[in-house]
Image 1 (cartoon, helix red, strand yellow):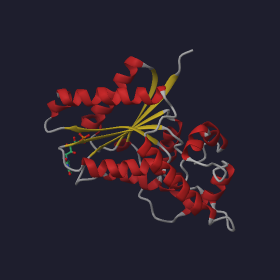
Image 2 (cartoon, rainbow, N blue to C red):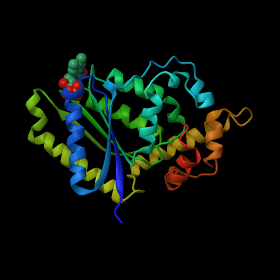
Image 3 (tube, helix red, strand yellow):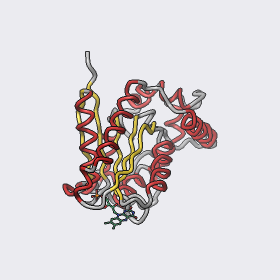
Image 4 (cartoon, helix red, strand yellow):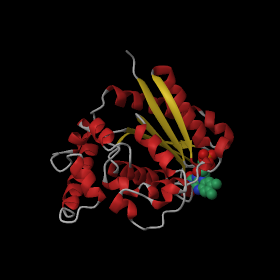
Amino acid sequence: MSTTYKIVTINGSPRGAKSSTGAFLKAVVSGLRKRIDIETYELDLSKYKVSFCRGCSNCFETGKCPLDLQDDMPELKKMILMADVLLIGTPIYAGNITAQMKLLLDRMSYWMHLMCLCGKPTALLTSSCGNGANFVKTYLSSAVKFMGGREVSFQNYLVFTENDVQEVENVQRTEEMVADIIGALNDPTHIGERERKDLDYIFHSMQKNMKLYEEEPNFEYRFWKHNGFFEFESYMDVIMNSERIISDFGGTL
Ligand SMILES: Cc1cc2nc3c(=O)[nH]c(=O)nc-3n(C[C@H](O)[C@H](O)[C@H](O)COP(=O)(O)O)c2cc1C
């Protein structure tokens, strides 16, 4: 029986249908569709209402954000959690991710203490005129790692005119990204040596940190305890137990 993979794309561009980032995300999805069975879900952040984080820290303490009652974050978080593959795309603005993408990540800050992406293959895609890609890659890689995701590909697409969306090097970038994602799906526990070290370091430092809440357990501590994270020895344990972790928590994140 063949597997159908849920591919969730997130586009941080404000330009909706005109977005080159959106065009590249679509190209990757179309490349994947030629090779594997997929269902796709496009999260175009320009179409969602996401309020600014107000810094109340409720999410860290209770796992609940009061703003979730008034905007589209619950829907976005639900889709991200259910993805088999996450494609995160953003144009580069002023040498960084767009405000739309940062807003989403700010509201997901508490996930950076939970490792709740649990080994999810995550591809990072930027679209720019060439300035700031290294900085953005470092930032997005780190955010994804802290959420427990497994970064499987990065491409910075260069766009100077609208025609560049079809430019041969950009087409090659898409092909490379598709190949990286297929490779990651075929080998779900593979992590490069450097990446595994980073992820183990994050896992162990977070484990130490969380233990400090033993006396007065907050949401994060309870999440770790409930999922057996204190008994895990490495990030690999997180990956090996990923299905149990997400399903046991009932999608309430
Ligand atoms: C306000 C603004 C700021 C930008 N800043 C940068 C930048 O710092 N570095 C860069 O390489 N490109 C920059 N660009 C170019 C965009 O990253 C590029 O056009 C991108 O392909 C747009 O993607 P989109 O069509 O998906 O919105 C900027 C564009 C705009 C509109």
